[in-house]
Length: 423
Image 1 (tube, rainbow, N blue to C red):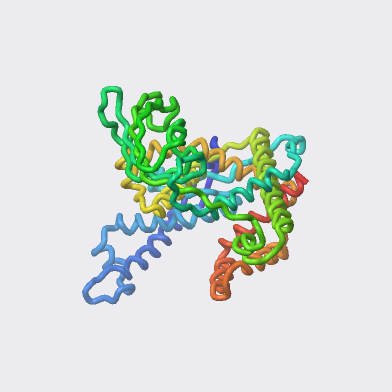
Image 2: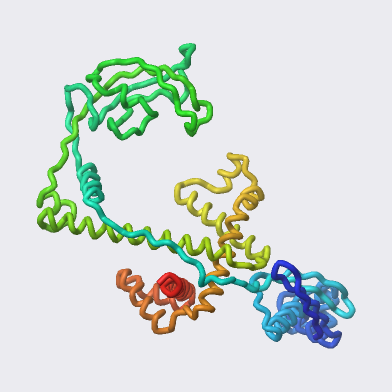
């Protein structure tokens, strides 16, 4: 076997390989042996058919094609291993000549990544503070979720829950599509309806009717309603006033499952708010660092890696839709969307993701942030602790297969990297 290697743009390599006639003859013999197991010839057992009998029952071109396929698989693998070529996709094969048997394999390889002066990246950190207002907002939300309602004969006010019938008409008095509803629920003050609608309901009593005009916002989601003036007719069907709970030990026990004084409950809320803010701030710092890192990263990304990432993104979208009961293919057909257009739409984001991943891999090497085997095993023990005993064996099997291990290694490596570069 002889071969020549040529570097191509976009992190691709061309390998031209010539397989000797002697080797092709050996592959032809192996191909014949394999195919003889699949052919039924009267008087011969499968796998024990003589060469000349096989050729009388199978086209020699078919046998040779099988031999060439075997030659390609073996010689390509030998060349890649010998030259330590870091391939990242399947090769594109083109046969140049039958005699001598020569073919060209074009394959995407792991690209070289250059990161310039990444140590100069500075990201501003926010100072984390938890105010009394933050705590009060959480407590107000908790009260809101626990609020009950009772029927009221009084005039509607903010905070009340109502059920109303309404319908909307254009300036000519014609009923507009999608503007009619019966027993429509609304809590006054939540602004769940178009601006101004709930204000018109304040002060109305049960079974009272009212007519008013409203102009839809210019940025309203439905274009045919943007800036449109609509005449509404409304009838109040029900009014309920809220009964807010008092935050006391009984309320705390109901919410948390354990008794405790209100002040301790507030401290727990304060701690939770602080943890959330710190997590959000940490994520923000990391995202800003990655955006700056991308600016300093130079890499020629193979088209195959971008195509693979696009396919992964579309697969995620399809899975998400199917979980909601929507068939992806039928959705595309109904929306008249071509898969090629979707791929073009997501190509920039896919390229950014691949570039980010390559930059992180390079930085992990430069910063020696790869986790040790002890760290990986310790993290795996933590992962196992979150699963019930009956599922531990399955988790251990996933770890041994390598997929879960790979996820843990990546997670630890990125964590160690950020600890180093961001402190």
